[in-house]
Length: 213
Image (cartoon, rainbow, N blue to C red; front, side, top):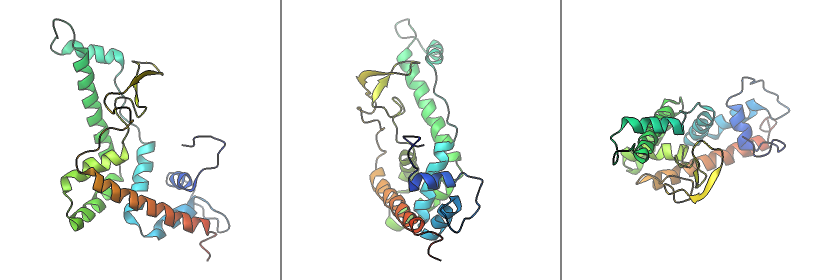
């Protein structure tokens, strides 16, 4: 999770680690995992904390693996031929779409997905936001990386750990796939919620032990 293993974890990284630890022993004189979880419960920002839990769960969840070049070529053999030859380009598109669907399904299976969606729907109804855009918007917020270049912004060489020098056409080099129509207003609110949750939680943790009792 840390960019440099010698760096001290940020407050947010400490919180994400706390959500997956089995040691919840409370030390009233020092900051520990329990401190972060108690602080999260005291912020009162339900959506912000739901998003933090969802993101932590997604980061540690097993993901569907992408097809290898050999599997793509084998898939091309099962598709209609293009001028008498296997249509490898079409096969790449087919397996990409299938992998994207499997990734969405995995996200929807997360324990934190349904609670986040319920809170999002409450907000949407109160604001008159179209409910149909909520699920696509939440998934994009959770997994914005371009599925073709995996967020690098450059094309990947088949079955190789290195990138080419060419820009990824799918994301135009941004490293992110396009936002679903109407997602901007949803994303703005999600960012405000998680930003406030981080701020409030951090303020409490920095004031421990334990929250100036």
